[in-house]
Image (cartoon, rainbow, N blue to C red):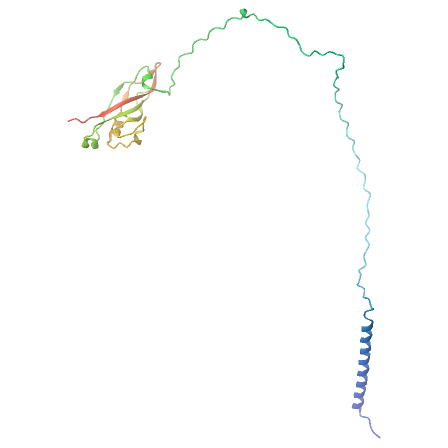
Length: 229
């Protein structure tokens, strides 16, 4: 009597089981392929919760009544039949000019007094200033060596005390001066202007008088430079 080999039986069972599984798998795939188009997949919908909104009653706002506007005053209306004068007639009034006293003549104005700070010209002064102290200017050395002579005309402002307050140059050798010029603005090549100005600053005059009061006055003064042997 032949004995069965357990290894051979196990292999036969394994093959039989594998064939059955493959058949079932093919049948299932064929079924899914044929009926997959007829299946409808619905998306998941979240349930919507209903909210209840409660509306409260709003109380009515009491309205204020506006006060009635004040009554305007009535304007009287002119009725027909009442004559209103268009123009008022004024009776002419006669004036007697003979009764009006004549106006007395005005007194003559007082003589005009010069201001204390006023500067007048030499010819306008009632009492002319008079030179009481003079200094002889030094002859410039440059002009002496060159043998040059000349004359400088200065414009002096004499104060109320008789002293010189300002000096201007009217004419000088080698200078083009239209009216007057400050000594520092002159070229003064020969040195005549400097020597003359230094001398006249030491001059003294009697004050000029106008209406009995001392006044400032402009004085023109020539200074000559002459060589002597």
